[in-house]
Length: 72
Image (cartoon, rainbow, N blue to C red; front, side, top):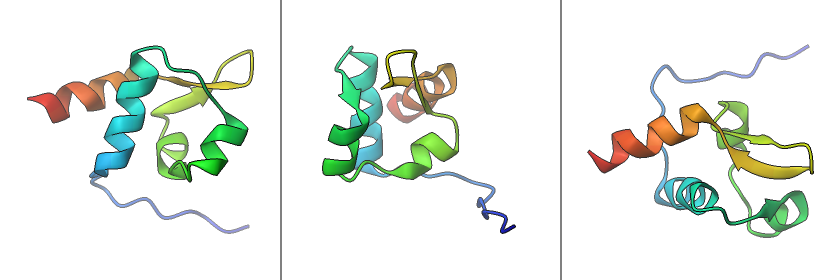
């Protein structure tokens, strides 16, 4: 079993912030679309996005906090 290393500080890319903002505004992103757009797995790994009951990606509370920190 291999452990995934996570740096202690997370700096999201511009694309990752844009994705979180799209999800917050209600845009539906499903897994095939995410793969096509090369959506960063870091958002999922760090808990900023999660799958909802429909299998679509949704922003989490920590993802919303990350957006707020970037806007300040």
